[in-house]
Length: 287
Image (tube, rainbow, N blue to C red; front, side, top):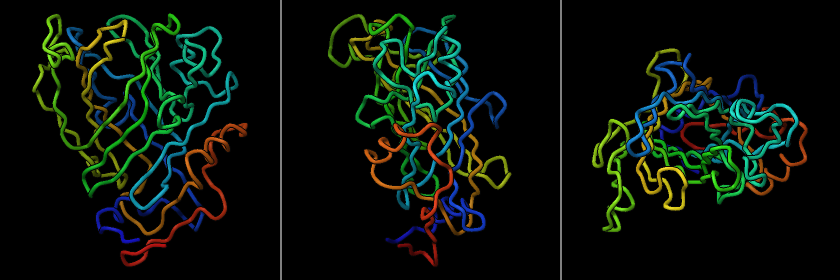
């Protein structure tokens, strides 16, 4: 497998002393640039994004890293957003059947005065994993099945595909406008359809660790009880404890299915260190 120089620089330095190491992503009010902003959906005003700490992130290939799915029901750790919106956290959204990836410690989202539970859902095509792919030194895409939960049961649980980039994203028109029907809102807070927002990837605070910003635009599903069809956007700033340079990286074992089976049997989150999960990067090549 060939490595680009940029990918090797970004992905290197994750291990110290030959021990496999996952890394952590921080996006909170206390991190560099804060957590970020959420626009809309539709006519709703801009909001400060909820805090997120994503743990146990590691590489599955030279250019792909994953937050594996982990859910242990009502046992601790419970994600902060679920604790804030439920008297009896059980590891599921309020439909009672969609599990939360508890490796992503997501805080509650105060959206227009209402506390909303947001998280990575475990029932979609990604099998509960968050997947990121490095395209080059400054461009990364990130995908997952994101879920917004209004706390009223199945009718208020809205799942949507999440496609984020450190490049550029354009706010779309409402689905209604795209279909040529009336009633759509072609804006998201202070943004209007056609506006562009841009992310970034590098070491912008100069601490030797990877940081950046992911931008996302999209539409609420027409089936949503909340702002159906309306566009939304966000910019999510993040820091990591992943050195921006170095020679070795950690690698998660197996396929998504195997990782999910392993997580289902685990009493704790996916292990940050495990024998045999070391990949050495040497002069642009790997095994």
